[in-house]
Length: 399
Image 1 (tube, one colour):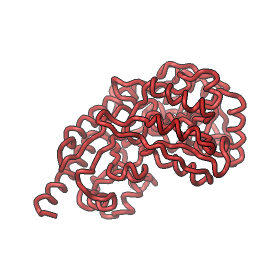
Image 2 (spheres, helix red, strand yellow; image 1 turned 90 degrees about the horizontal axis):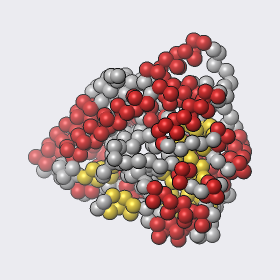
Image 3 (spheres, rainbow, N blue to C red; image 1 turned 135 degrees about the vertical axis):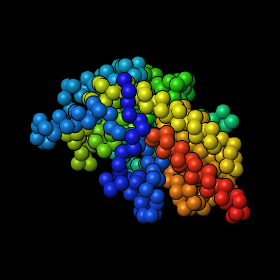
Image 4 (tube, one colour; image 1 turned 90 degrees about the vertical axis):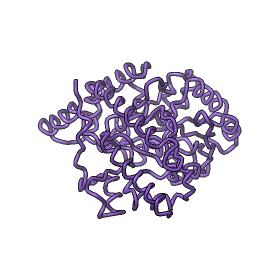
């Protein structure tokens, strides 16, 4: 079946977060410029999802809505077919998003002042969920090697056993460095955290977006029954099918008491059902869009290859980190010897290139930029043309 990954949706004036941010920075930005920043896609919505949402609007009032059996079945079937493990229905808890679930989990399993471990550079809402709830941010930075980023297990072991540490927020696959953690790495993480009595809040939102040759293993598929008592796995179809606006996520919590604590903290925030659109969007995506996802990954592979060919060792010595998962390549700009603010100014003004600055993900990312390559290939080519032209102009003029 053919899928449309060439049409650019019209998103100006729709309230799109990344488009509005670009236009706020530069209202005169070129009509052909597309932001490659916030992690949603510049592709048209899969047809089965569109049909499901239209059917909902045409068939029923949009009242308070709870998950149906079809919703639970779709979640379980997807995990079994796509990831090779079989969660139980009673493990499933819904949330309007993975980020709200992080806040909920931090509130549920720690007290103000307690330590929560993160591994930067990492998705910036991790630190927000810790600091905005009055907890103590404990950093165990990833180690960058010639073979890619690695977990600092010695540092993790030390920090996990500190008296104030209560939980770790794990990103798997890791955003922004693009690692898909191996089963051995995850087992070692499990052993350390179990020994220290930590809760593991595992963000697996990018679990479906894995490049050929790599395999995502959900943490719960590797955990013993004892280890699973303190694990929450947070998933969503939002990244996989660009459905963040439907605001629906699925959290898998096997242990009953852990699940009850999470649900109590969720309700204490005044959160209950999802919006009515979240359920049919997920059902259609999981039941009917596996082929679309396979085709999407092919587009991402092609776009990453283009990015690597155009940037690796070029334009002053840029370097693209190997992408194992996500659609968000991590590019090292340190050869430019610009600080983050100067680099952003150059990219915006000279190249009309809007990315996510690596400094958003912690000090460890200050010399990086995160590209979003979930866009038509011609859009990425045009962006790279602008970047190269801007770089050559600067070199020619000696600026």
